[in-house]
Length: 332
Image (cartoon, rainbow, N blue to C red; front, side, top):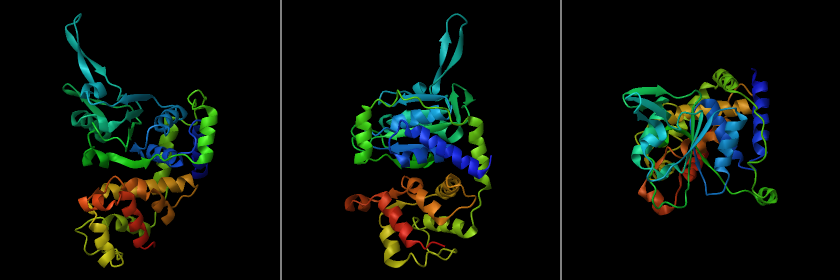
């Protein structure tokens, strides 16, 4: 598969998804980007913004197996991963695999489950395996977790631990539709699941996409740019050998660091590079531009910044800080 062929196939996939999902360009792009890179996505948005519909449609378009788990406070780890069942006929235990054994797993309202359930999902996300009893079982390949959470109602929810948040390649915001888009949604009556969609690509072609991404080149100066963006978020970075921290110094640097308790880890830098390469592939290019990095930076970095109490008091969000960093760090 060539870059141009892959770009056309991705556009075809977006058009097929658009039959059901009106608007939500960032959500669709985020899911496709994570799918190609091989990462997981955290979707955040108010109820009724087609988050679940987008995930279901993506699974059907890509011909991948799909399972949905509704996270609730009384959910048990065995409800996610599976359990051992005693069979009276044979007097032995047999394994009953849970819904996590699928290519695409929708973890709906993930922050409503307690820590034990979240830790069971974390093993699947990090190790691509599940331990049932004393034995570990590999998950189907490819494997994606697409989790949703509601940013409004926080009563009865459990905040995701930082280790689990960092395992999500992207955090994507589902926004309200425009007036034109909402008029189209209302005219359809909201019944979009009845619209048939065709399979656009297979799991084998997905791995072809990944091989293509590995061949996309990124200049050393742009790699230094990525490292510079990430290093600005760390309090212990005083001198940057790449030569860009001298520009982000004094009041500007202090403004950023006063609102950050913990910065982005190297996993964030790697994710930024991989996602920028996918954006370049979407555009039909075999090289990365600074605009590719800027486009994916909010989705890659927003959930990896641990904000200080001062940020909460001043109403400063992660997106505000990412936008500030992108304006301060010079583009090579």
